[in-house]
Length: 378
Image 1 (cartoon, helix red, strand yellow):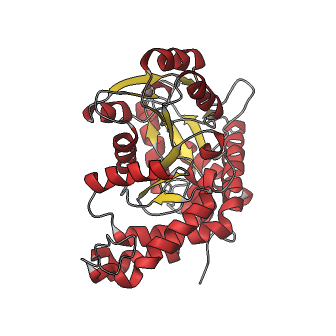
Image 2 (spheres, helix red, strand yellow):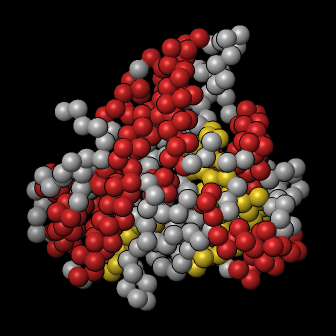
C-alpha cells in the first residue's frame, strides 16, 4: 500500500467498531468510529462506486474469501439449489466448490480455456439444472475472463440465474480500465480481494448496480460478519481515492510490464509459458517453468536472498509440476517501468547462474524505480 493508505492501520481506529453505515443519529451504539465514519460511507464507498460505475458497494468483507462466502450465501438462494463455478483444474479458486457445498448448495464446475468458459458445458448445465448462481472465480489464468458469452447464455437458457464474477486477481486492472468491467458485460455482481492488482489492504469488496441484490448481499453480510476491520476499510478508502488519480495509467503499465518481462525472460532462455502465438499474458500473471521441485526451490531461495519474493505454484492449468506464478503489479505501483523490469530480468539471470550473491538484487531494482502511482509526500 501507499504511505497514505497505510496511515489508518496505526491509528486508534484499528481498535474500533463502526456499524452505523446509514449515519442514523439514533444508532450510535459504538461511538468510537463516529469521527471517521464518513471516510467509509463517503470516501471509500463513493470512490469505489466511481471506479466501478456501480452505485452499490459493500466494503464489509474482510478478505476475498469473506467476499466469496457472502456472495454465495446472498445470491445462491435457499439451500438445495445449484451453484456453478470454475473447475480448479481450469484455474478456478480451490475453495469455491467446497464453500458452496458447505452452505448447502449443489456444486457443479465448468471448464475454462484461455479465459473462455466451455459454452456447450455451460448450456447443458443451464438447461438441465437451472442454477441459482453462476460464480466465475478464475484465479489462475494469463487470459482475460470472457464474461459476455456467459451472460448471453444465461439470458437464453436460465434467465433467473444470477451471474457473479470474482475479480480478486484482476480488480486493479478492471477498476483501472485495462480489462473489461464484468458489470458492463452482463454480470449482476462482482467482487473480490483488494490487495492483489488493486493496491489496497487485505480486505474484500462487493459491487452491484442492482439495489435488490445489494440488499441480499448486505443481509448475508450482516448475518455472517461482525467486525469488518474499520481501520482497513479506511485504508481501502484512501487507496481508492489515490486510484482515481493514478489507476488507469498504473493498470495499463502493469500489463505492459508483465508482457515485457515475459519476453525478456524468454529471450534469456527461461521457460516462460506462452500461447501458440507467443502471447505471454493478457493480464498481470507471468508463468515461468524453472525445473523440478528441487531446482525451483533453489532458484526461489536464491531470489529471496536478493530481496526478491516469488510465488511457487504446483497446480496451474495445463502446466504440470512447480511453476513460478509472477506478477509485476507491486513493482509497477512503486514506479517500475521498462528499466526496472529489465533490472528484474537481470537478477533472475543472476539467480540462475549464481554469479552475484551480494544480496543487493532488490536494491539494484529499486534504483531503477521512477515516479510511483500514488501520492508521494517524501
